[in-house]
Length: 87
Figure 1: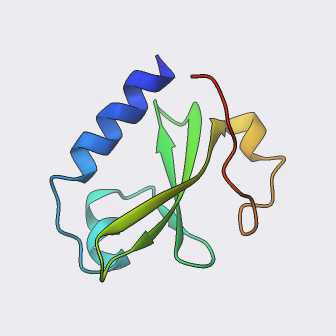
Figure 2: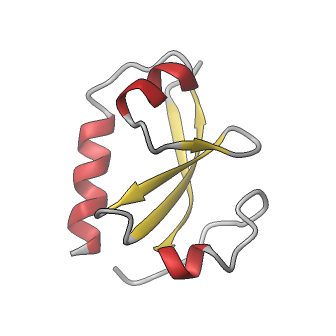
């Protein structure tokens, strides 16, 4: 289920041409900007959290972390690196 929700988020995101975080926030109201161009998204009704780095100028995203909300509460979102997790 988590894998499907993540795929849905991705295919929805690529439909947009965001120029900056304010444009993204207008569509994803619960998205939070943290550090180093990192954005946190709620996935599957806030059961999961997704941390990405987004470079609006180049239209590039890099997944930094994905996990449950409870797991998210135990990480340093500003410094965490990609985690390998079976979805």
